[in-house]
Image 1 (tube, rainbow, N blue to C red):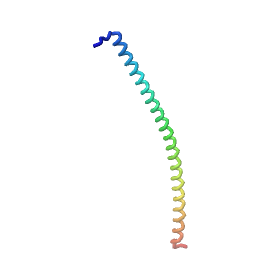
Image 2 (cartoon, rainbow, N blue to C red; image 1 turned 180 degrees about the vertical axis):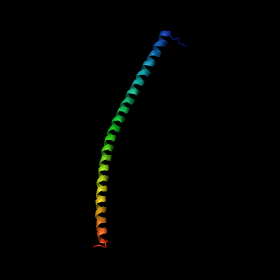
Image 3 (cartoon, helix red, strand yellow; image 1 turned 30 degrees about the vertical axis):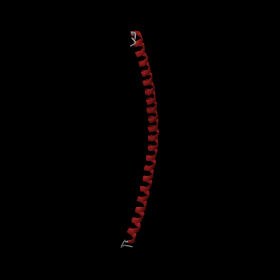
Image 4 (cartoon, one colour; image 1 turned 120 degrees about the vertical axis):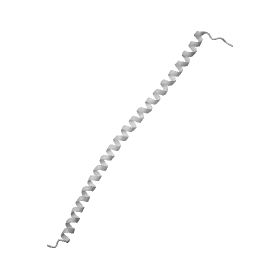
Length: 86
């Protein structure tokens, strides 16, 4: 059995801690990068969805206005067809 001196034991522990710290820093940097990419993705996605919802809203309003105009025209025609005073 080989006896380690306290100074070599501490040096070994310090080296392992340094390696673990570097590994944790690399992992943390990778995670930060992933979070930043996700943040950019969701930002762009929200802009696209906002634009899409505005266009759908305009389309719905245009369609409703057209339907309302068509119904009014139709009702005027029907009312005049059944008007006993004509």
